[in-house]
Length: 83
Image (cartoon, rainbow, N blue to C red; front, side, top):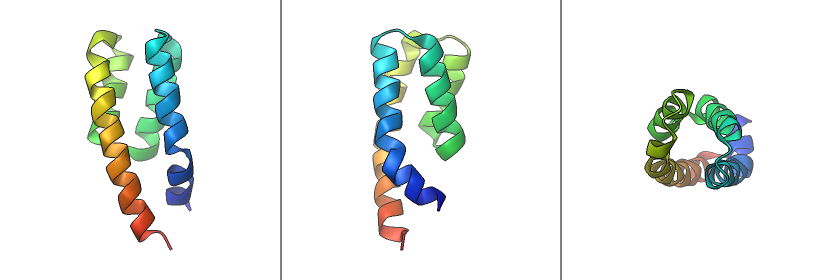
């Protein structure tokens, strides 16, 4: 089930996104944000992916923080709803 995959892998996505941002690896950041946006489509993921695609990297860090909060909430919901 997709929700189980998301629950088990969401932390890896967030770690890769933060590492890419910290290393200013914009290619990796764009790829990871795009993957996460396709996988969960939270408002933060959509916004961060758009900023990255438009090379607006300075504006992304606050959105990554928002994205992390959204992912935590989504994971909590999925854990309670997943059999």
